[in-house]
Amino acid sequence: MKLTEKLAELQIELPVLPAKEYPFAAGVVTDRLVFLSGQTPTVDGTAQYKGIVGSTISVEDARKAAEVCTLNLLAALKNLIGDLDRVHRIVKLNGYVASDPSFTEQPYVINAASDLLNRIFGPELKHARAAVGVAALPGGVSVEIEMVVELKA
Image (cartoon, rainbow, N blue to C red; front, side, top):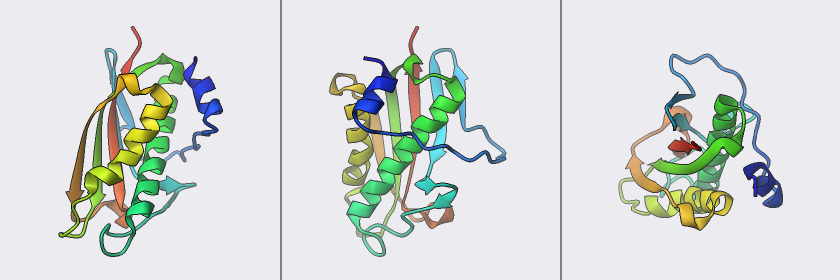
């Protein structure tokens, strides 16, 4: 099944990312690998799910933020390579969670992104991953995720 068909079956619509000028690329393609810059839970150009997990934002809201980051990553990937059906697999996911010093459930938060990717790409192509707690993230958001993708030969 084509990836575009799988997204439709799962009733997932990728967001349209606003064009912005940054001093870095949204992603870089090298051979068959795509390195995507971090995406935050931004919807229609506005940061969502702001706060520190474990003190000012709930774990469930942080999980929703991780899903939004993942959809933004896929949208950025589509913008970069043109057709998501060129994707072979997700290789690596790095998730950053703005965390209260006592919060230790970063993997649970980032599992929302992994679960979404596994539903889309299939559980047989699981990715490598890191889930890291940080003091703060850009714009005060609770989650940021970056990804490495392998394209088909």
